[in-house]
Length: 487
Image (tube, rainbow, N blue to C red; front, side, top):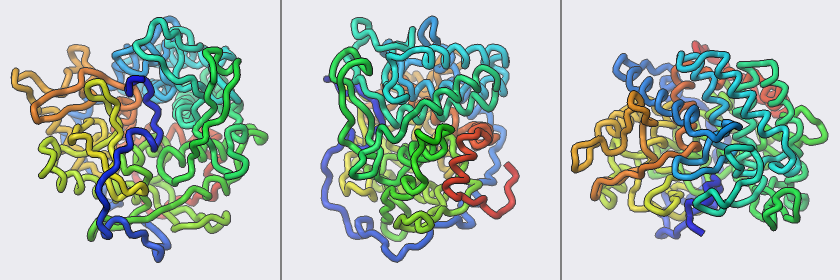
């Protein structure tokens, strides 16, 4: 099967063994008891964008929003997984639903248009029984109906898996739209949250959530299948979002105990003299910003695993991601000696497409201790989605990507939103210059949400005001950060 066929953000995807790592980043820090905010991380929260920055961010957001408004199926209006195929991914739909309040607030659509689109999308999902298992939605669906994909229409044969991470992203987007629009949209979003039976996806022996339930036949959820043997057990962004929602579910019979969130394994490493932080399996940059698209960790103090019998340090997750982003950038600068596409303003490695391959980079420090640089191919959304943690560095990268030109003097990776483009293409390289003429919903989405959050905090506020998020915060005993906050 072509690697582009399945774009699930699973940490084991795309792994290629690297050379043995130096002790500077392989050594865990057992003495670390807390990762907490510093003056630098607080300064990042107060960063002021100049007029030129704001103008570029406007352009990028407009292009990203246009993807979710235009790349949809009829009549269900479900967002496509990517521009190069006719299939929906429910994770893309999660970002689509969160995009609608942004579109209204920025004046690109009316509130009536946004609410109508949200209701259409949610009804297409909720009112069927062939698109979910245990209330957890299939990763891929027919973009026209919300039912099983019609493989006679698609380029690839996609997995039929009720995916816990893709459902979590869908639900997060539904919660955002519910808070903003209320009414029917809120009622439908409540169904999605309440129906998700998280204990049914649990490995009862190991006490971790599985990555999902995989159908054995084309009948999908209405036929035979089995739970995945792959588990969510490392403490990085996908996992925390999933467990956060599972703890906060409105249906007590479908919830997980808070201890499940704190059971996730926290592994702390560092690179040379840079500050230590809790690392992810592969070190890909998305594993440090996905949960932050919705959970407003800026406002939360370090959590406390010990209060629930867990192990590992207390972590301020905003500070943790800031350290991860700056370390990742430094690693890209160092690797530019081997991969000339990378550099001071060309960094940020995360899942993307290039040619006929779907690439998942691995960058140390990480848990796997492997590296896969994939020839230094850069997806612009990665550095852009890190803007909440490293605003100056991310803006420099976005300006660099906007200015790149190919040998024909045309913009290499920029597609003008005024002319119907979606801002940045999915990925590029410079040796020789080449870009992937494609967009993915799960890449466009975090870029759109991160920029809005760093500018106004809109998506953070909407998500955190939802009852599911409030319940999760309370059950997890997450305390507010005790510093002044103007956003």
